[in-house]
Image (cartoon, rainbow, N blue to C red; front, top):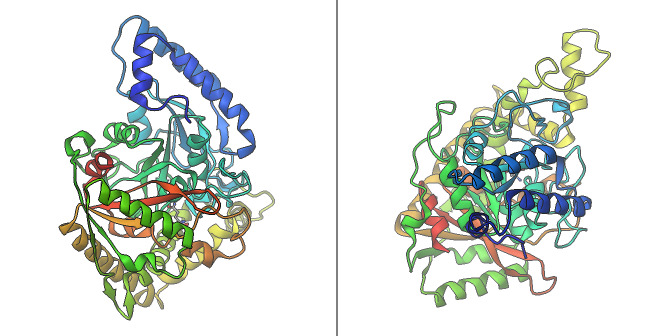
Length: 472
Ligand code: GLN
């Protein structure tokens, strides 16, 4: 059980003077200390957090009215920029790099008096589903330390799971918030594409990336979303969205679900049981559940196209986004190079992990002139179809229910030598990013055999962010 159950409960206690912001920060710092073996943090900004706490306590004593997020202690994924602080995307290639500016989302939460306590471990450049692909080593799941926490925001998830902060700010390109949330028994939310500015988020797949949050309840996520959402001059893909969760609170929702998804060959039997029980719970709670058919596509169904389309397009975007790490402009530079070209080559050879290199190679290949039409352009067309099919279901229903992951958290090392198996684990999460729609993962129950957390996922139509966060 977390010590502070929600932001509003914490703020009530702070207003009443039964606790202080300093005491809150001290509690979380002591938790970080205790939970070090989980490897969730790569750097902790203890002195700074305490100084901010003292300044806030002073203002509270002066009866100044604080910002909307006062008292909220936040962890920051190591791919989100915070001016004057190091950021590395868990990669050697950004070793020693300090942010020159803060992400817009970071600026917005700081302006509302949130306190950032440290940066969290993740998969290198957000590429991975287990947080094993990091220069800082793997993160451990607090529910079962020999298992992965999910990825790429594994450190972010464990930072909340181990009660070392109230809310974690992460990023989600194809499930990196929702899958770790599910593996760690938390709520995790990826907003509509464009809802939160990507300015200051280290780019992986720019047309997929979104900043989002992990927390113990949807209200805390909604509070952060309200502060961060909205257009930003630094990100031309950001736009105005209705995000006020309270506006949408309604009793009964029309929820679509796809029976065939539950029969997918990769689905773990215990996960299926938890999800079936969860469907029943929704029915009892008065929601209207409608089975819908799995959309047919090409020679198969929608499910067959999700992972391939996602990996063609994100690797293409990654190969272009990661071209900037050349040993000249940022972070790490290999020594001993005889000329400029060798500087590039050695720096990138030594600086990027195997997984990052694999994706740069794949992305460069699908964009190359001989194969562009066959892979990249084709995948763009399929993406459009996936988006249309998803939006068609969401036009007649409030939400589409999906699993988050076909399995629970797997043992550390189990899939690390098998990139394709790792990619296939993303089958249920990439759809929301391909379609640009918001998606929420929440705890559905414990696996009947091993007791590990199982999550369930809901997608809403574009801009249905507030509705999603207010519904469950
Ligand atoms: N596991 C997916 C990938 O490796 C998703 C990562 C993410 O959302 N950043 O691309």
